[in-house]
Length: 447
Image (cartoon, rainbow, N blue to C red):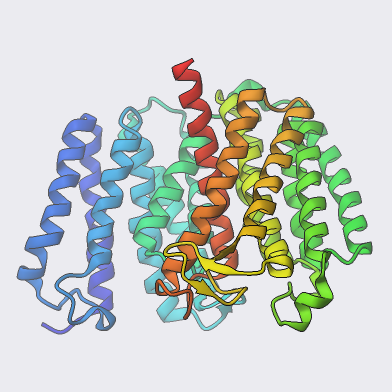
């Protein structure tokens, strides 16, 4: 049977029907169902349908891995949210209907492409958000059976679909069937965890104050030729979110990260530019840089103020910026002063600036950068000593893991095409934030 993209999308969307069962199943039954789907997609589906559901780029493989990832993502959602299966259902719905409608509408009407990803269209992305949010709302309403107010579920569904739609539009190189449902589920969970009493007028006052402070910092950065116009706007959003959630302590950490990163970029810039390995635009950073390194911290800052897990999320916030600081400082100092560069995976000697390469000088500078950010967070009163240690260690580990990933996605040799640098930076800060929260939670448990 010949392959049909439309048929594949219809099958992709129709599988959401199984999510209706989550209203009556407990997490064990739901997980068993999802595990059975993984096994079916791995071993049975390829025999029944042959190449009818296999894209041309997947021909020759024993199976279509995106279809397998679909079932794996559903299983992960159920295992992560066992007592909130309506959240798992929302993430599932965003993946099934959002991604499905984006593909169908994008191919039919998607003549206008996204500026940051020509492979995606404006119509497709907005179709993703609309269809995904409506499906997530309906499915979470059904599975929750009235346990959560409908308006709250609607807000969570929309924000989950919006965040997942943004991730789906990015050229990450990671299969959408993995990124989309997990992002949607995480955002849906965070929104539904917001404490209603935290939504008062003080939040608006903090937001206004944060935007003013971020604008002031942005103007100084503009004058210092550290950001361009898009970087100023993106920094305004990140700075406003950080001050809204964490006030002065959080903003001090953000300022310390920006100052340290800008200083490291300027160090030896002429020499780095002469070798062709300097930051472009004369060292000015744009919106892509701000979004890549600031989004995780901004979300953690807001969530720290609005959800019951403020202590863990404050550590995650500091760890994300400690990771970003370690990455920027190690890269910039390593380019200028690193005498010998090695791949992080096998320590084979390579040229400085090679994807996934590290140097002794850059590594030590990165450790110092992460430690400094953690110390600033502690000195500003944002973290306890234990929290600062967790954030600092997470920053160092997260930075090294990015070098490992950079080497692996470039073919294991530090050459070839890998993920875009901004995509790597985003996942780098996400891993750092998760590690920081995990280290701190483990310390509290053991203590």
